[in-house]
Length: 237
Image (cartoon, rainbow, N blue to C red; front, side):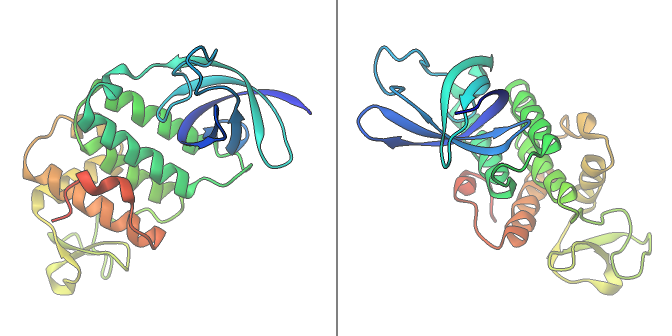
């Protein structure tokens, strides 16, 4: 079987037999890959805890017909701040589930990979739910469905934007109000997140953060046409 190396983030795992585990990874060069980690559930496994969800690892793998085989795994990011904090771990699992839903098997998507690694690193440094919200919104933009947040989606007016028309994909003014009401503070936060000012947006605290968090979940779920199981800890209103 061909041998290859890559880097990846563990998205999810499930048991296989008595000691093995199937690991689903988002890799930089090979897209979403499913691989067998043999003996990983044994106490003396050479993989240790390096192949758990959120793990960012350097990999050496054998390519198989349906499942690849992990030969080596070396930790690149431990993300201890995430793994030891239940709130942050819940947020990280939301990042992983969203990436898993949008990634395609064996289809490289380096931008998605970089976004996921960046979001996990930011979450490890900053405990704010806006990291997940920003990731969801930027995922939509990556998919070609970036929300319009600077002017009214209907008339392109720069009048105050007061609602989010979820099915249409953006904010609307009072004259074309539909969908979910949005506060002015949340509008400003959305514009900061999608306008390249995420670092400043992460410093924001208050009700607008919860608003944007809720909106981002609703909008991504609408795009995916399914509920995200891991966002039960996020505010749904």
